[in-house]
Amino acid sequence: MITLYTAPTPNGWKASVALEEMQLPYQVHHVDLHKGQQKESWFKALNPNNRIPVITDHENDDFTLAESGAIMLYLAEKSGKFLPADAKKRHQVTQWLMFQMSGIGPMMGQANVFYRYMDEAIPTAISRYHNECRRLFEVLDSHLADREFLVDDYSIADMANWCWVRTYKWSGVSIEGLEHLRRWKNSIEARSGARRGTEIPYKIVPETLQKAGKTLI
Image (cartoon, rainbow, N blue to C red):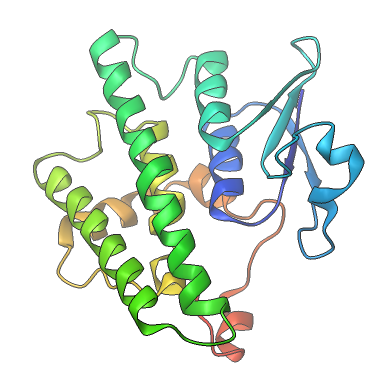
């Protein structure tokens, strides 16, 4: 059994989507970010960086691991799923996982901050992060032009990038004209495991966000 410490964010979903897709048994501990639980001493003992997600694998001497990308690699190796056995393909999957971690995630995160949360709008910052997110989306779209998934078969690289890309509206980024990206996004959304993973630790109801003048997905 694995314990997943998480919250409803793209990085949190990366872990829960992987667990659902790999059909590994796990239990969920919701970390309430609004109450600052990620800064409490019990959580800091799990992850000194005070960030979700974190897993503890009770079948492996209570092995505890943080950082969503590292968690996905660990779970893929544990389950033997969604990570190619071929060394070259394996490294390519890791490449696209790192693309999300170094590009898509940080840039969309900054877009969220300046587009959604700043008390005062800073147009140059908003434009900078929207443009960079769009550029990264175009990289994905171009790569997906002649392939169904990022590296041959569906993998943790697809899961990781999808968990962020699916929230493009929240970041204020357009995917207009990116038909390969849209097709890829929709095909993953059609997977029951992926959908279930995005409802952990609880389902975000789009209608609630819309009433507040916000749209997440």
